[in-house]
Image 1 (cartoon, rainbow over the protein chains, first blue to last red):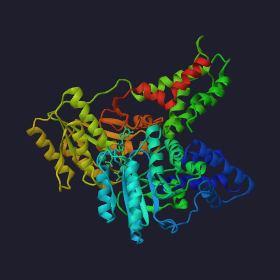
Image 2 (cartoon, rainbow over the protein chains, first blue to last red):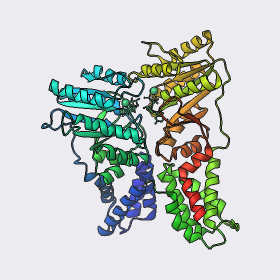
Image 3 (cartoon, chains in turn orange, green):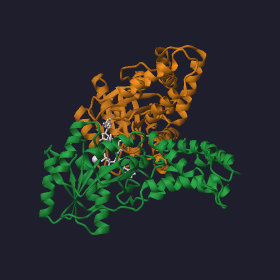
Image 4 (cartoon, chains in turn green, brown):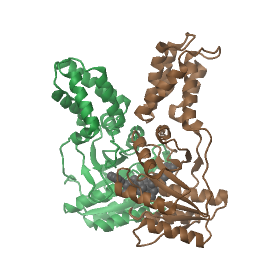
Length: 297
Length: 306
Ligand SMILES: Nc1nc2c(ncn2[C@@H]2O[C@H](COP(=O)(O)OP(=O)(O)OP(=O)(O)O)[C@@H](O)[C@H]2O)c(=O)[nH]1
Ligand SMILES: Nc1nc2c(ncn2[C@@H]2O[C@H](COP(=O)(O)OP(=O)(O)OP(=O)(O)O)[C@@H](O)[C@H]2O)c(=O)[nH]1
Ligand SMILES: [Mg+2]
Ligand SMILES: [Mg+2]
């Protein structure tokens, strides 16, 4: 609350009746954005946009400037985020709708899958989970616990088995069961490990033997407390799997997750979900205005 | 994003070249680039600012040696300052106490369970210790199983109490068990928790009081961004930990969080994690970390070219 009042009160003093935002305010804005992990490049882009707007629409009041500020930041997300959805939805014309979940180690993939499965099940959809992390200790057990908790079937093999084979089995089984949604878990992997990234490409390809356009969605999970490295994660995972959507986790902490603004801007991938806790209902549909507002809290 | 520091400094150094002394004017542009490199490496905003102004103070008025031009000298000052900040000597684990008790702490998914296994394996194979791993994460699905699988992989016994939801009790019982079974080291794995979660922070504080560990370690993901300072400070306020473990350095992150944490809590970084396997553990080298944060490999080649 404190930084919010000071920032916006400074803003009003510095801006009202002027045609140029003064350096103090911009410094302050820079601090807020960089401290939210927005990154230097994106921060400069936002500041440029604001300066341009202010120069054009002279003699702004604080109210208007606040609005512009939010609009310009959210604007970087706008092109890719249709934005105002509040529901968890899957397209009706793809059945089963196949979601493959990817990301670096420990970001929250398996947990997000549990939460998502629960949301879909609540809507009366038939969900099947695939235990594609056959590498990490007890990863299969972890997904099994989630499956039991929610009451959805899980397809799994032994630890150490081929993840592509698990994915194939899962999609096949979902087709046989006439399921609506398939969610495939994968092992965490750092994006600079070429072999592991190739493995993802293979998992994807093998699913296409059952459904040609599967997976319909590749969900990249980013840890909200990750800094600028998330850029490289988005880049490399996109290269290997054509990521179609993002989930940002752990936003119940003090980290702001600002790095996704630049990612969304640069790679045109929409942020779909945010994780706000470890419990089954702690997943929300992404709302860009609330997200941007959180930087100023 | 990860464009080399050398690219950024190249232009700045051209500006400096040909001057015999570092002055306020010729240093400004370069320091701006250094600051930006630090921010791109995830060094905390305030700390990056402080760092560059300290470097400026050191640099101003320095006469340039014959072999170095002002740009080179400045880069050297940056590197020396950074290395010093990252901490001098490598600090090991305190193995006093019978048994030695080591408590893991950190955010969700930072790598505590994996590192518990690595450390157990290291102490077993390198220091010939009898180690007991203790599963105190009673929350995360299959957390205890994970630790058991890890224990099996490295041949280290795991103490857990199925059905007991009280980590304080479990850890106390584990120490009794360790004493009765002549274990030298007890490593307590705990659940991940957010620093703002008061109930969970109180819980780990209670475990800490109950077992009075020789070593409390704060495990942090090296990809962490600006929030690293808040978290490290909050955990340190509650636990006054002995050291920091930096995980997932096998990635391509610059790891500026290391510098932020070091600056804010001034505790040594003791080990690093460099992979998912049990052998992927290394002692921390401050100079290498300093080079990594700034991409100093690039800077060295820059200096050679200049
Ligand atoms: N506070 C909080 N914790 C979360 C959130 N999402 C996941 N977690 C926790 O983060 C930790 C890691 O989550 P996982 O789901 O196992 O992550 P993962 O990406 O599957 O990990 P690997 O499979 O090991 O790569 C667990 O302790 C989760 O409970 C979130 O939104 N908020
Ligand atoms: N590449 C790499 N992965 C690591 C490293 N350390 C841990 N991991 C992986 O990171 C993920 C999370 O590790 P865990 O040990 O489960 O983390 P944790 O802190 O115990 O997680 P919670 O108990 O959920 O809070 C797993 O996929 C690990 O294999 C490392 O140094 N390098
Ligand atoms: Mg997982
Ligand atoms: Mg754990």
